[in-house]
Image (cartoon, rainbow, N blue to C red; front, side, top):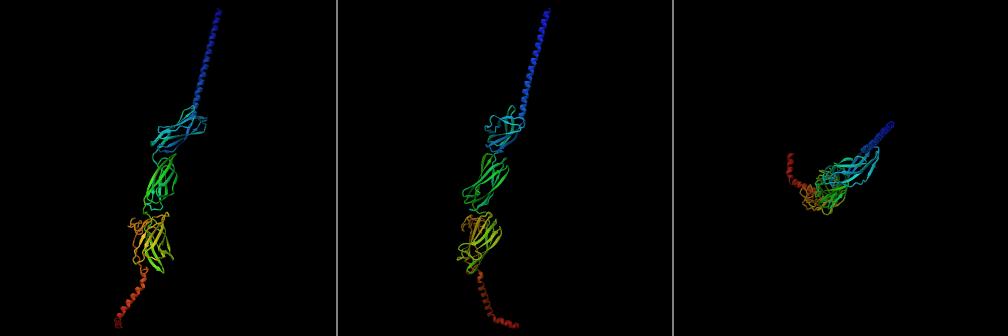
Length: 457
């Protein structure tokens, strides 16, 4: 009986020990599983927090504003603000208004703690003006993706160009200034602006002009010296760049050949002729009836007359508009019926002009004709031409004398006599005739005068 009790007690102790061991094993397994789970959760949390410290630090768009169909480049710089290196991959730009080119970035790129990394993405905008949103995305190692919104402006406005200064008309062979104004009405800078004047029978100085850049809402003026040889269209061909994209525009200016309404118009006045031995002397005034000043005015005679003596040519200098200057010329000539008086001058741009007044000095009331001719930069017209500006005859404003590139005819009256010496050469004869008449009258009245004198005594 005692033996049975002992055996049962032993079996009961074994069962209790087995139960305790099983409970400890289960507890250890549960603890190990819990620890592993906690460790995994902590590692995942650390990875996410570290990736969140990578941020976009700079964004540039080239160009700033797009034309429809332009190519562009987005450049994004990211900075790692954490303390460990982070892996980045698959940069992309997402938008329904863009055609994005394949990226050159392959695999994972690592950015160290406190360091930066820059991605460039090429794309083409679709041909629809407007303002659109795009999304830059970037994957991270063991973390969430990075997203950054991008705004893209598409504007169809081109560079605006206009001729803002030009002559009222162009004199043939004379250089005159034309000013072209360029205006950037776009939201971004344009660069490498090249202006090339083109036209049949037209010379330009300079032949091409470069403007490195024009800021948004900015403008610039370019002046060209234009010399036309014939009536034609002057085209300013303009090319410029918006980012890496080249665009063009043209400005057309018709070149009409005629008299410049603002030009100087020298008019010859108060001409007087006297003799000095075998030579002659002409004096007179020149009045500028035009709008512009005449510079470097020189007066001389032309063939068949030959300048000689004290004043073979006379330099007046500058004559302002509505002002005048006097001159004196000494010359010899075998034919006083055609004495050309040549007036030459320059405009403010240094262009040369010339006008010839042909005087007939052979009679006391001679008629003269004036012909406006020009230097190498001014055209020549015949004296019989009847076209021109106000004033009747051709040659530009003023009518009487003509202007640059024109011609006219007029009548010049001079007091001439004898050998063209003027009425002054008859003064001694006139005086002698008067004295003779007075003597005859006194002789016939001598008895009556003598009687009167006796009565008064």
